[in-house]
Structure formats: structure tokens, C-alpha cells
Image (cartoon, rainbow, N blue to C red; front, top):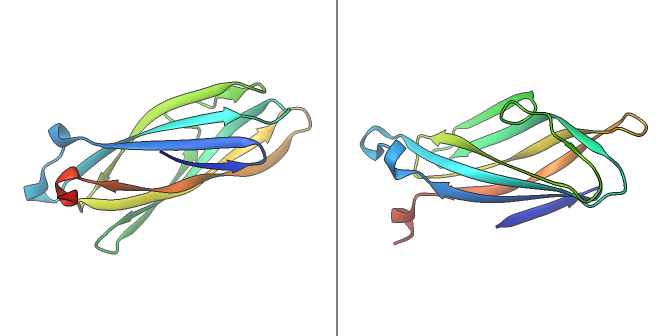
Length: 128
């Protein structure tokens, strides 16, 4: 698990290769990632947007930006935790992702970015 903390918001990531959805013969590798967002600040916050940078080990790069995460814009009170699982397709068996969440502090409407730590996605057969 990899984690980062920005303004009291802790984001942790765990990845898993999905062999049943992957097809290495056609350069198609599927990974899931579980994100845990913990509000250690003193303020209620809401996740508004995500911005991802996705890298394949062949040098290609993609950006994904949009509202919320998996169709939600979760609100977290101090001490609350939000978890979700999403996925990523790569053309190589090794890649990485990282990015930011745009959050709003509801008390005063202040917007701020929270770092999603860069994490690797590696098909297990690459580790042998």
C-alpha cells in the first residue's frame, strides 16, 4: 500500500492484476485499484473532480479528468473514510498512475488539490 497526505486528507492505494480480464497476447492488461480516502482534517470536505496521469512502460501517456470518482462525489466529515474500487487498462504488463483530486472545504468553499500518490501496476508474472 502506498499513501500520501495533503492538508489532512490521506489517500492510500492498493492495486491488483486481473488476469481473467487481461489478454497478454493482444497487449491488453487490466488492473484494479482500491483507493481509501481518510479525512484527518477538522473540516467537512467533498471530492469534486479527479485528474489522472496514466503511463504504460512503452512510453505512452494518457490523462483522464472528470467529475467525482466512480459516479460519486463523496462528502467526508472529519474522521470519516471513503473507499472505492476502479480499474485501468494498459497495453503493457507494467505501468503507473498518479494524480489529484479537487476537493472543496464546505465550511468556506475553499478548493484545494489532494495528491493521489503515484502507484505501479505490475502483472505478477513480471516479478519472476
